[in-house]
Length: 196
Image (tube, rainbow, N blue to C red; front, side, top):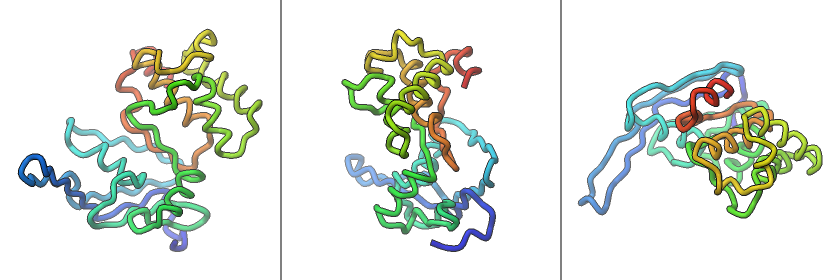
């Protein structure tokens, strides 16, 4: 950790990431080539570009799902900057549990859990008691246009747009200092997109 003197929520610089496709004869794809990004607390930044430009790869590198080949991914955490690129797995988990939320393009949840429990589970994991978490989860699901009639059902039975709204509710229920959203509205209809 380094002292948080620069005022950034995210300070990523010089990021390089190469994928080697072994089934394609060792074809190398450079998906990040010197990428840098700085985001201040409270700032909203959108990454815009064509499909395949590396937007999701950058998001996954910021979250620590992809290990970069070089560069630094500094995230504000507990009054200091943690370099996700060099942090231990335990440090990365700590940052993810308390400082850095992430919404992927796809909902990943235990198939038998209800939508209400999927969303409430996120708040419980961050210290909220179960009853309060369920109340907040129900309100967030309603806010994102998931009818109360669906709350008891597993999201695996939902449409793609409904699943993505459950995915968003799971992150929105918590007050994340920094939240990464990877194409959060791509599968949503215009009304749901406006709601988000």
